[in-house]
Image 1 (tube, rainbow over the protein chains, first blue to last red):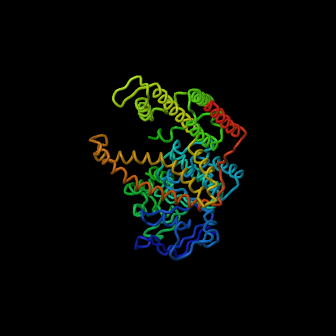
Image 2: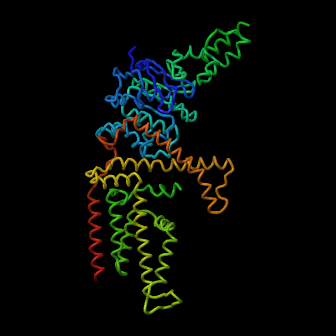
Image 3: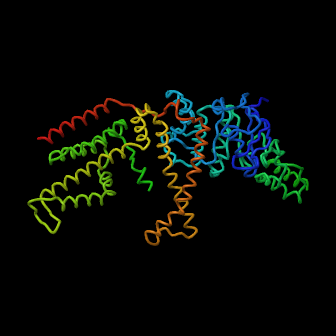
Length: 277
Length: 265
């Protein structure tokens, strides 16, 4: 598969700290995949997103985006390919109204107004927020604000969307609408999704989980094998999946196959073991 | 607090709402200027009629304008009373020590009162019918010539609109911090003036710190969305000057001419 992002041997140390936040990290991200990045607080997840977007510059190593190694000259070009949705919906709302905010990225690219009006409408339609077009952010819920943020990112047509704990401040309903939206858009728009999260449910939507610890990749595998770690997951800032918790408590009484079982597999195994008795 | 700063805009639709905000902004200031040209009963009456006509055109209830007077009540009262009793006169109606009440004094204080009402009504008309963002857009557009002397007009306008956007956010933040301090036993309503002012220090410091962290987050978000330095940007909001805006400006000129005429009459 083609790599859309290729990180090679990157190290970064914050100016006011001694220990590096990212240590000789290498990671390939494939085109059109949904990748989860997990890890404890301070493991370097957010630093990594900032490095990918060129918001901070790596001390050593290279980052390649869509076949181009990013440097000071082409960073703005690379940034157009990436959209980030941040954690706090209030801290990324620039415009005075919903439509102004969606237009912000387009304004920055100097898109002519006629085209801008069209694309703002299209982007709002994709996230199903057209009827809120002229509202001010204060009158929106957290989930709605994040949807506006997504529309703002979509308007500039990026190839990669990074969700930097974007659902962590939302209520379950808001979280669900945002995740459903991302799921849908990814197929419609053929995008690569990088999701930084502490939420195990969210990682289940992804195809690959990368676990960071102390600025290094410690695990890189499909979700099923990562969930196999069971209780050890808490060391990486994740909660054990519910089915895995149930399975480990049941293992003493019922014979269950080794490894991670999703909810359906667990249910099947449980009723089968009862029908054998 | 929220109501005081931003809640002044009243959503609606009428001729006054449809006027170009730049025109409204300039006309309002121009009108405040010509109010000082009035010097007799007829001229004040003429301006009052004009303002009431504008209020009528806005289709906004007069009550909203009267409410605009309320925060200025003490200032108006003070000025009016001062004029009423301290205007020197050769034929006082009543006098006691330095206080004199005369016909001239009564007339002048009545003029001053009408002047206040006129100024407050027109500026209320502006803020009720124009959103804060429209006002900031007009300021940008009016300041545009300053670009010639390298004044960063677009950046200042963006700063202004972000500041407006963050007022309610900081008010929420203040409420949160006050609640947190209350939970630790701070009583904001107690004690003398000094004590009350002192109890605001533990609010201001965290507020200051958190506004910096919000600013940092916002800067990162703006940069990630491709904001460079304000140059080479296109604009989503456009202001359009139409026939009726030119007409409004002509009306103002006519008003000035009539006023000058009445004044010298």
